[in-house]
Length: 187
Image (cartoon, rainbow, N blue to C red; front, side, top):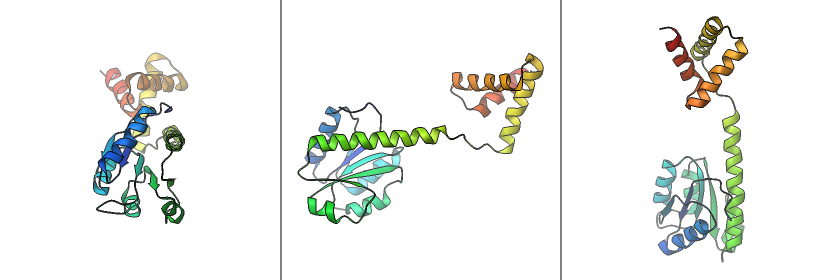
């Protein structure tokens, strides 16, 4: 079954019934399919509206081959190519998964689970990297901490934790929270 990680998925096959069939398999396995396309252009259009994910596609469309589609696909997307064994063996792009026809359901599901897990881990790592702040933002946070330390007799660490906690509780960034603290305490 799908692993419960929400990853954007686009299914693109020239024949609508093939695309719908793949979509049914994925949905039944616990994945959420965001879009179904029958041309490369449609797939790219959907991909450009989503924040990364996986494109499951055939190797040939009326408007382009998988290589062109891969080239124009946003870098935040990974591709699963479903094609004849000879196409998988002779593919020109190494950085994509290839599942040989006839497609085995368990292979598709396992591949999607593995890729989803990999994408989720990468996104988590990116979120863990602290955001670089410019000098103005740093000064704003420092002023808010200074005001909290002065008015509420807090240590610098306590003031910082207070701003962090308010930031998380309100779903706002540290800079925005520091601005709120300054505007409330400077009245």
